[in-house]
Every structure is written in structure tokens, then in C-alpha cells.
Image 1 (tube, helix red, strand yellow):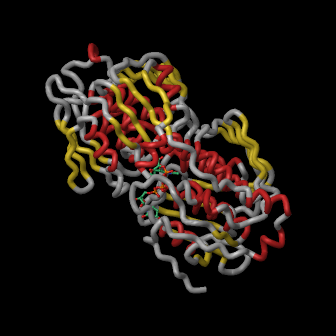
Image 2 (spheres, protein in one colour):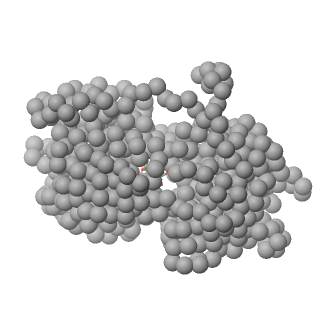
Length: 479
Ligand SMILES: CC(=O)N[C@H]1[C@@H](OP(=O)(O)OP(=O)(O)OC[C@H]2O[C@@H](n3ccc(=O)[nH]c3=O)[C@H](O)[C@@H]2O)O[C@H](CO)[C@@H](O)[C@@H]1O
Ligand SMILES: C=C(OP(=O)(O)O)C(=O)O
């Protein structure tokens, strides 16, 4: 079948779902009902976070399980027969959406206090609910497992943060290398039976493409070699989950993966790694408020680039037990004050793009000028305009932002700002805590996608932050 895939397709492209006769035959009335029940609801009224700047933070904060690991591993449960039991799953709207994606395929899921069990024995569809897939990036990761398990998949184009074009060409070319025929939204095994092992080199170490191909190859017939893959800790966590299911994935954390496919994987028990981006956000919170507190569980190796930068700027970072880290940014302890530093984002182990907006907020409060180069997502500078509303002085030239630190006696000041994506929201909350006066951050739904109880955790450390309803009139004007 001819391939008509356009790798730079607009993500808002509408999807026409043809009914799949194979699965319609197999679909029970109950699972059809649950597909129909998939939420198509009017979005809830937006909330705002109101922050009174200037509080010092202290105490201890618990770090939740990793959003990005949990999303990939939830997709990975589709590779496993029987029941997978996952621990340390964060309570986030992205996870709720991913659960809807899996349920729309017929998975039976129980969610209780950070634990999720996924029973895939009743899977009855190769077409996940498009509305759910379109809401998040992780929804698209089900493509590999569905294809590997059923030999065909029909998946809508993904959503996620609006931070660039975010094409899916590597997923498609990689799956083709494993014997898939891929049309715009529909993929099936070329030989009509299943995927076969193959070799594929990614032009760029894409996290999602690596994870999707790893899952697909785990059930392909024979050996697969993937090179120039992503080395992010979430990729390693997924590999550990798959290996615990009986898969044979070697090399996770290096740039080459060798995967020997298995006919059948079984549901394992797995604990998701701590969220390094949440932990990094809290480290920056300590730095920007010139405070001292501890956090756990944290894996310092996952944050080495940030630890290096903050230490060079004057923070004292100490491991007080294997999973607890204390960060001290008390002005009395930092000789010569906080000095700005340069950052360039890149694939792990380089500086994470998901901490770039937060670190930029910090740099606006340091002395001297700093440069922040975003090399991963071409559209990840939307927080700059909002930071400027709080008094930040930033000039963007191409993919680099030149941040002018504070002048003698100057500070950020409170204002009304809007989060346009998840980490933009985190950046604005951090800046608001350092600003003089009151900052209102709208667009909290973006923050809820990736931070579990952000304001409760910050309040626990001593921040003055509350969640309030955005008046309806304001919401209507924004529409
Ligand atoms: C749910 C999840 O895990 N999200 C994370 C994942 O996103 P995601 O997996 O979408 O990010 P990628 O690693 O794929 O993207 C990195 C770069 O590769 C490009 N690219 C990607 C795929 C492709 O087929 N073609 C292509 O050109 C992207 O446009 C981007 O410029 O990794 C990003 C990079 O660490 C993080 O910011 C996201 O938080
Ligand atoms: C970009 C992010 O998430 P997603 O890939 O889910 O949009 C993020 O977590 O910062």
C-alpha cells in the first residue's frame, strides 16, 4: 500500500476514523459503551494561581512519580498480557487522559492512591479514542504497542504542549523499518501477520519515537537494532518495565538499543521513577526564593546538569540520604550574590528543555547577563513575553534568549500573566514567588497536566499561593 504520510503534518489535523471491521466484530456491547462514554466534555472553568511574592521556603517536599515515565509505561502495559501493577503514578490530568486512552481500547483499569492496575486481556480495539489522544503527547505512544500486539493500529495525531511543530516522522520511519505500512493515521504489519525485527537509526534522539519503537520491537519477530536513541531516564525506566514483563531490551541509557522480540509479554509490577522535572522545578524554587529546603525521593544523577549550574551560581546542594537532597540558596551563604549562568538545552544528559522556562525565571533574578539557548523545541520561548510582564528584561534572538539580570535594587514585580504551556506555567509561578506584590497566573490547566498539587506542595514549604476561580466574564473576553 502506498505511503501518504506527511511528516510535517499540522497537529490539529482532523482525523476520520473508518470503522475497523476486525475489531467491530470482536467488540462486546460493554466495551463499545465504554468507548462511547469516553469524555467529550466542555472544559471546566479555568482557575488561576494567586501568589504573594517574597515568602521564604523551608521544610521538606515529596517528589511525585515521573509524568513522562508513567505515560510511556502506561502505553507499555498494552504490550503485556494479564495485569500490570504500577506504583508511584502521579495524580495528573495527563494521566487521567492516558487512562481514557487505554480504556477506549478495552483495558480494565483501577486507579487508587498512586497505584494503577491495567488488565489488557479484554483489549478489543486498535483505535484509541481520538479526543483523548489529541489532548496529550503520550497518547500517541500507544501506536507501537497496539501495532505490535494486533498487527494494526489507527491512532489520531497527538497533542501536548504547544512548543513547536513536534512532527512524528521518526515514529513512522522507525515503524516502517520494523515492517509496518503506515498511512497518514493508520498502520498495519506489511506481511499481514506482525512486526519483524529491523534496524533503524534515528536522525535525532527523540524520546517518544525511541519509546514507541522500543515497545513495538519488544514484540516484533526477531532482533531489532535502534541507534542514536534517546538516553533519558524515562526511556531507561520503560526498558526496565518491559524487561520485567519478559522483554529483552539491552542498552537502555546508551545510544544503541538491541531488542530481541518476544511473542508474549506478561503484566509485571513496577515502580515509576521520581519526576526529575518536578524535582528540578523545586530546586529552582529554592534558588529563586533564596531559601533552603530538602526534597525526596530524588535521583541526583538524573539532574546532574542542573545541579552543576546551580552549584556554580552559589547554591549548596547536599545529598542527605540516598534519595534525599537538600538545597540551600540562603543569601547569607552565597558570597558575591547569585551570578547568572549560560544554559543550552539538549537531549539527556544535557540540560533538559523541560526546565528551560523555570531556569530562565531564576536568571532574571541573578546578577549579570545570561544566555539561554533552546535547541530542542523551536517554539519554546512563549514564557518570555509573560516573564516580561513581571519586569524581566529578556531579548530573544532566534533560539537564544539573552537575559539581563537584575540591576542594583531592582526586582520582579507582581502582575497578571497567562501560562501557555506546562513549563511556562511553572516558570511564572516561580517568578511570582520572587516578585514584589501579587502575581496572578492563569491557564492553570496546563500546570495540572504535569505537577501534582503544585500549590499545596509550595504552601507546605511556606509560599503564599492559592487557587482561585477566574471570573466568568474574564474567561468570555479571553474566548
Ligand atoms: C510525554 C513526554 O515524554 N514528553 C517529553 C518528550 O516529548 P517528545 O517525545 O515529544 O519529544 P522528542 O524527544 O520526540 O522531541 C525532541 C525533538 O525531536 C523532534 N522530533 C521528534 C519526533 C519526530 O518524529 N521527529 C522530530 O523531528 C521534535 O520536533 C523536537 O524538536 O521528550 C521531550 C524532550 O525531552 C520533553 O520535552 C517532553 O516532556
Ligand atoms: C513538553 C512537555 O510535555 P508533553 O510532551 O507531554 O507535551 C513537558 O512535560 O514539559
